[in-house]
Image 1 (tube, one colour):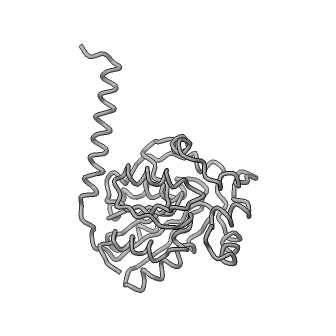
Image 2 (image 1 turned 90 degrees about the vertical axis):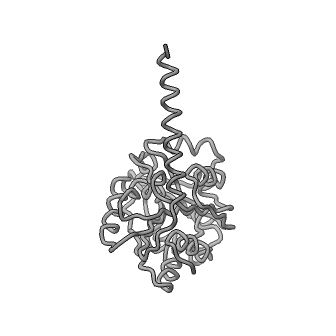
Length: 258
């Protein structure tokens, strides 16, 4: 007779095999040719950070729309993303940078979403304690620059310019710092109820010189979701410093070529 502990272990192992199998099945699906791309920004940013990518997508005939996240809670950010998805007129590639990887992992189960693209992004499993997972990897320098006040948080100017916006032209980096999104100081404790990357084909751009998210963690997340992965010689804001590489990755997910 099987004991309870053995049964529980077998059940968890079977569930994990099933979930990873679903992820592999999703990756085996060919990219659907689409014309819609929805881009979701992360913490300490706003939708304008996608400007270089948006222009490139528009030049090849794609409709690109940036979400403006309130950064007040996961539920609020997911709701903002779903409002934009509802406006799309067909299959859509959903793209998330940094924190927005959590958002698209939750919102990406939407039937309009044909593929997911993660750019130096979080990609939690459903219900996962992402902070605990991240703690098993090297601590990125930007963490030391988080400043909290009045229930919200932002990066210090030094951390923003050196760690978050490393490699960005200094004048532009200072503008980005001035418009950075303030986040609810409980935002990163949020847990998802879904992991859309298990159901949808996924792509991932690892930033090799990232000082905001450990590149080792990014590689783990990309591997776990069996994503089609590229590595960019960039810091956290590869969408600004290497927009063509990020655009090409999105085009691949959209079933297009540049």
